[in-house]
Length: 92
Image (cartoon, rainbow, N blue to C red; front, side, top):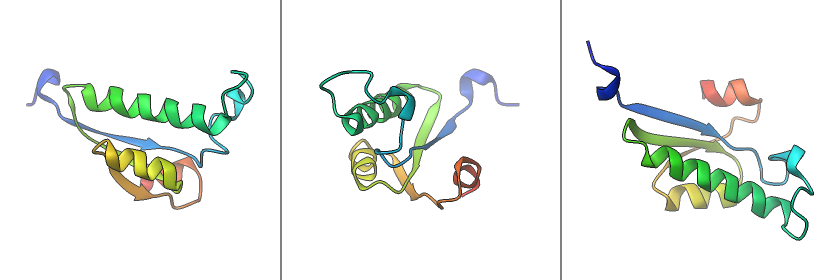
C-alpha cells in the first residue's frame, strides 16, 4: 500500500474564460481589470499546485487562450473545456 507521503497526485484545475471567471470579485480591486485579477488568481493557484511535492502534474481545463498560454508556459498540461459545465470538465 502506498503511504500518503508517497502518493503522487494530478491536480485538475478547471478555469473559466477570464471574462466570466471569479465574477463575485468583479470590481473588488478598483483600477485592476477583472480579467487580469482572474488570470493572476489562476496563475497563483497553478504555481502553488506545482510547488507541492505530492503533485505529479497539473491539468488545466479551459477554453480561454490567455489561460491556455499561461498554463502551458508554467509547465501544466492543457485540455480544451468541453463547454458543458464544471462536472463535464472534470469528466473530460
